[in-house]
Amino acid sequence: MPPAATTSLGYSPPDGGWGWAVVFGSFISIGFSYAFPKSLTIYFKEIQEYFSVSYSEIAWVSSVMLASMYAGGPVSSVLVNRYGSRPVVMVGGVMVGTAMLLASFGTSIMHLYLCVGLIGGFGLAFNLQPALTIIGTYFQVKRPLANGLAMTGSPVILSTLAPLNQFLFDSFGWRGSFLILGSICLNCCVAGSLMRPVTKVVPPKPAKSESKSQSCAERFIDFSLFKHRGFLIYLVGNVVLFFGFFAPVVFLAPYAKHQGIDEYSAALLLTIFALVDMFIRPVTGFLGNTKLVRPKIQYFFSFAVSYNGICHLLCPLLPGYAGLVGYAVILGLGFGMVSALLFEVLMDLVGAHRFSSAVGLVTIIECGPVLLGPPISGALVDAYGDYKYMYYACGVFMLAPGIFLFVMHYFNYKKLEEEQRQSVAVEMRTSEETVQLNMSQKHTHCW
Image (cartoon, rainbow, N blue to C red; front, side):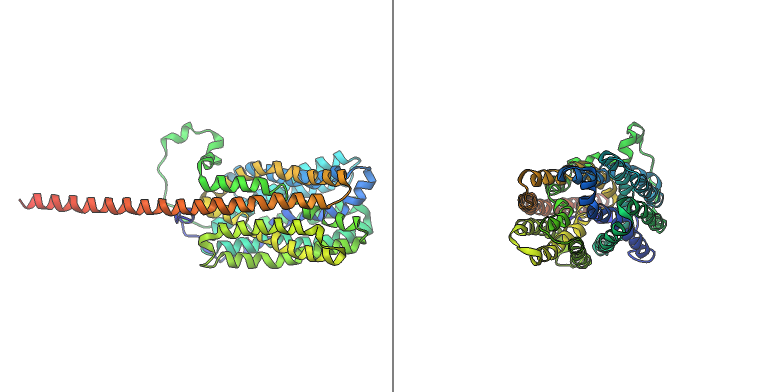
């Protein structure tokens, strides 16, 4: 990647210090954003029976929550650019807590769509976006490692919430559990309080005459990214892969119960998945920070996406509970690699200074596949009465974009190298012409 993508911040990030406290706050905030919708799948079978709804209808709860989290990206971007990360995360924590409180009084599945899905999802958006953005302001050299550590929050919190949710359900039912979970989500407000703005000295910029003609949206969202080659490659690949990214995890516990496995053993699968995921994310961040991988980190991401697709295609072929445990392990490896790299590779493509706008635009577009992925998968289960077709479909949705990203980034890297050579050649030619002009002026002056 060209140096400009990572060095045009206008200041030198501290790459440490209070930045590690920010990473810890992001760890909690990102953890709740991604783990919370997955952990709620523990209640799906019981809620499905309580409201007498289908697999597809119950899948909409997590789906709407994830889609709202992604759809809220641009709004969160604007708020972060205007007010900073700290207040936005704290407001998000209050929204999620309130959403779960209201959901505990739910009288229909539509009530859960509105409270858990819509309000809770927007609250998670206000947790996710600022946490991702602020890491780029504190880190440059160690950024892949910092992102990897922050993204580890998802499996750590999921490994805690999965058994906790089963215990809460057995003790208080799904209504009482939702009420308790709402209070737990208020910890995101504590995480937000750690996100102190980075101290930076930036030279004053001259007033731009064209800024008056810009719309309010253009000041906060960089729409010129749609002309950025790397951004468009990333966007196309991610739109496809998100159709199959979340559904295998959402349906892992219900799939186990469908095979006659008891509830605690089914919940244990999510814990195993989360533990492996927890281990691989910082390892992926460390590998992504090495001199061998970081210059071509897009290939690493392409491999991770393809690996996930192969895992999903293998899942129906693994028999019994032992097979599901094996699948949980290999899925944890693949899911963790993709999650650790998902936003780092975007920052690598567009630069930290444009990341807030980039992630806002990406998430609003990705909310479509995030919303439709699990329900489509649930519809396949309803239609065939078997989960294997759902896993085959998700495998294709992951493998195809993985191959696409690998091929397109091969050409993108070639193009970037060519552009860099042309830039160096122009600079050298300009320098030579300047030297010749100076020598000519000096010769004329002597005469």
